[in-house]
Length: 117
Length: 108
Image (tube, rainbow over all chains, first blue to last red; front, top):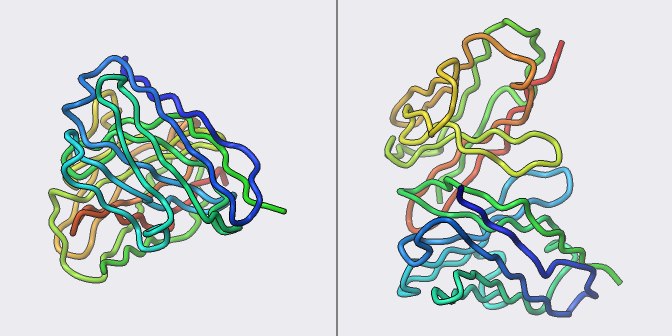
């Protein structure tokens, strides 16, 4: 069964940095694009970033461009999100999600990032 | 930039009733890249429908999707207790995902 397990969330001060990780299993990781999607408390879903299987193409939402960096290590079946210059509005549950044909077919359980002084 | 609008914001229904959820795009979109998700409190979203009308693996046939152009619909033919949740539509285009604001289906 496909599994995506996020880690690395926590409390960070405004302007600080955090690195999220996602461990994937039970599928050929390198064959799939991967995404980060976030959800602020009590709010809807917001796509953050995508990366193709070979890391050839990377895309970001305007809200995080220049501050967040997505990457992956196919040898380790792992996805990452480096988050710098964090703001209060970045507070959310961050989901690691597998992409397939324009959808997200599997989601992790999420990791909570809280940006507060 | 495509904006997705969902209506109604909240739907109050009883188990056994039919639910009809709407998703409207600000411009014509490809049906191939229109999906629906279900999210229950404290859980990650789950893919229900992709390509506007194809059910994802393991999704019961009481869930169906339809539509084209700018107007799409998710129908739950007979609500089961486990169907009370928030439903999001989603479009993929220009290398980015866009989600609608969601429709909450709750027990009347």
